[in-house]
Length: 175
Image 1 (cartoon, helix red, strand yellow):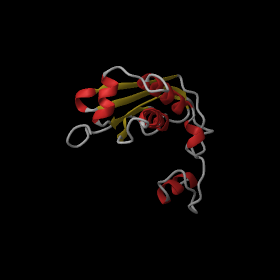
Image 2: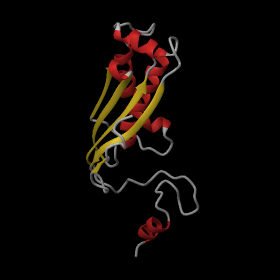
Image 3: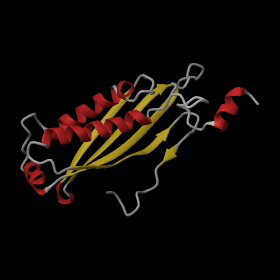
């Protein structure tokens, strides 16, 4: 058995070496292949924020949902700068959509990432959703800090050694 296989068996956490030290995974011998990932999350709002957003009002900083979408795209592009062991990769497509759902008093955020590279884009999809959610919070906190960011998760990914992943439905429905 080769040394790489022995290390995999001893330590399934690929970002730690055999001594528990952090390392950036070696992707130098891998070939580029198509990769996709989708993630979602929610920002729950209180009544005052729902009323404000329902009236079409923007925050002092601009249109909350459009700016959050832009921030999500930027977050995906800079994932490698905030997650220490992520590789900088070329992103072919980043989509972030924020949908205000006033009847449920929340904003639904979804990201879709595409790339042709040597490593996956799951972290970029999750970073996009998280950055968009934090931007909603930042833009709305002057009116109310009573927001909850929740349910950020990977929905789907394709490509790479591990193949396709499809999340199971959240227990009891979406948050």
